[in-house]
Image 1 (cartoon, rainbow, N blue to C red):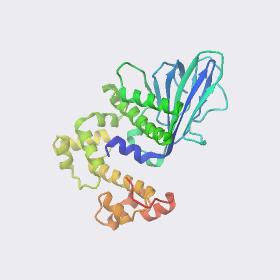
Image 2: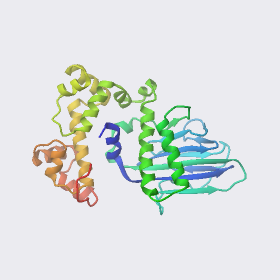
Image 3: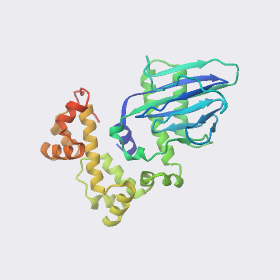
Image 4: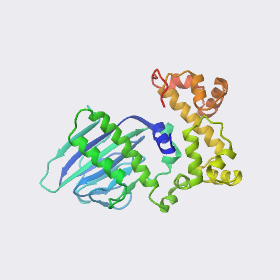
Length: 317
């Protein structure tokens, strides 16, 4: 998989959830902090205000998307002056289905929001997500992020009028929405490079090419010279640039990612340890076990028994 797809697959747990809600003014709703999650709100109709815990209120209009990568709490309302309803609304609260549609009665103007969230495992955190700000606001602009807009429209329509297969369609659209949100952020321009090394790493053609190669084939016996060739740089220049932007030397990142991938395979599959070792580039189960214990503090067999849920019967990627 490519870098972004790999990162999401490694961190996501369970199923994402979503809801389409019609609010009639006056309305104000608190969405609490949910550690180990990421949430979003999209204005499908009308307008509203986002009241973050820190900073000034943000006016939102049709097509605006707000994303909370670290699960921080916030308030949505028709006006900054509207009292906030309690108890708080948790978009990830377990319910009978993966999505819902609701209407909140009131005498005023209608605002339709599409909200949802994703469960993320902090123990699997990748620095690509840790570098993101607490709040990402993607204003609606003509011709901007057409894939994101299309995913929002499809998702809103499917939740409003669910048909056969809706659970699968909505889950897939929510996964697409998360990837399009992150892609829109990282593609937004040079200004995003100020937020952290990983934004710069993905924007750098050479470093990005090397990362993509590692994520698409972690088992390959990568060398700094070969990765430098992928990047179009000399060995020394590539090593300096990669280490500066990613925060680890190239081969240290390769090892870390191999063992992160191995941990996911231990959690999600019942494959033998030797098969997983080969999958992530280790020539023997012994070498794999030693490397895994250095990184995760426990042997892979014990990790599977104590940390992981009962695995599936087949190796999954």
